[in-house]
Length: 415
Image (cartoon, rainbow, N blue to C red):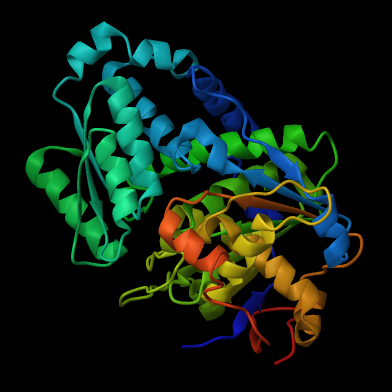
């Protein structure tokens, strides 16, 4: 297994090609929809002053999505808005009036009583879909890839969904869910987009912009210099990058995308630089279950292609490092519980700022004492057994890190 941190660095970003589809106006409409839910409160933006000082940067902010709707992950934002948009389209409801109260009314429930939504998930997205389906009185079916944690399956079933773990990896499970939707007359709700299936993934991506709007408001006018976004299929990373590019305009922070090296489809697509999407096949064996996706979302890639300066492929120990860093605070910082997929960006920052052999990577990422860093902890301990194995028992310990790099244009770190 490759233990190197690999980077594709680019300085040829084309701001003229950026789309505002996931920008401020969309985010405000989406957030109004989420605010209509009785469970809605903005998730915390945690200022880790002690960690920033220890790592030698100006500020570190982490958006804690473990507090989202009591579901321990951000994914419900996309699932709820997507299903809301689908229902609004089906019933001819105006978008500016879309609300939980409207969708959960008895009249709408009666019309939708036979509706079934289906999805493939590692756990967090499926849990969000099962939750919103239960809230609105519709049926949900959830398929999970092989190796999925029993705890995550149990959480989904507890919300009333029919759920099972398949014998396939994530991308093949998506194909199975799509096949079932076609055969059973169900509605597929997936954030992976392909030709002929783009409307629903785009709605899910729009749903994610609520957390980005919250974050910039919570920053109180102090813009970050660096934003680190983790990617699976790239839907969240693409949506949030699109929002930040629209919100900050020509002063957009440096956006860096981070993926597990066993499922680094965005990295490989950036590395190839041939205009095609590049897949990763096989078991996609990484502890970052929420990022174990081998086929990139076309919509997400098209945004990241214009907004992201860096694409990094990292080993599992980087995520484990982030979990331990957030779980063992510095000084007066508060303790944060972040799962494998949630903590990988903080893990990367910690590795880069504390490993002498990563000096060139630090330079390429422009990380110095003036850096103000924003990360998104996308999940809490959604697999508590694995969380404790890593944080309590020290699994996936980090060590001296080799690094390789590929330069598509402009600067790159040295081999």
